[in-house]
Image 1 (cartoon, rainbow, N blue to C red):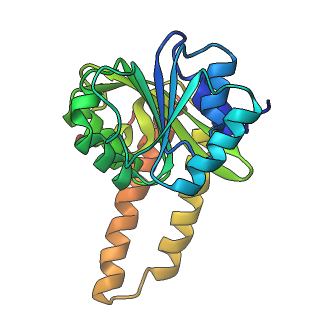
Image 2: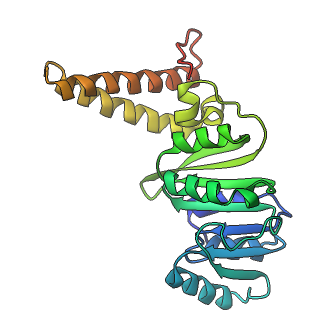
Image 3: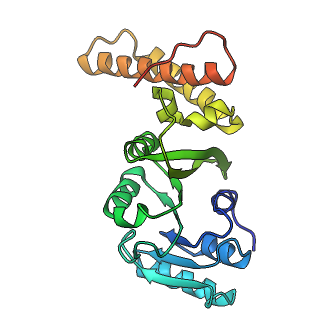
Length: 240
């Protein structure tokens, strides 16, 4: 089976030998891959929707993986017992929903070894949530798949390493490792924000002035990340 670039990256982040729950499994491709390639000795594919779960079951049956993958209809981690799995994969949803799932499922997550997360929005909020709850981002990267940017992260128990606004907004590991896709993304974002700033400068309405301040702050954080990735000797950092 051939996974998309995004799903392949997610699957590659799971540590071999970890019993894994795929939360929001959709069509079940990641679950099937983990079982088929013997990455996870046991897999539980879970989704809140009956439709997606039925499609996952059909695909699991087609790949003759019914004895390797259990399916459960579940809102987040609700149908998972503490200690049942060692790892969870949560991808394809916004940051606020992901935070809600992790908060409500804390008895389960407290006993996990690792979490593979790929939030589609509010990544900064997710990173701050992890830091506040004693989770450390061990590995992180950005990929470009069919014209869209995705970030995948592996979190384990421990003290967070993020210190600056750029660390939380764009990912300390990606900045320090000079992630090429993030670098491309940042330069693109910088040009977009500079163009917007140029257009609204001189407009003295209160909303415009507020937006100018926001854009300057956003550009400063982007520039910090870019400078660090380019190895600039004098970098202005913004402590959180």
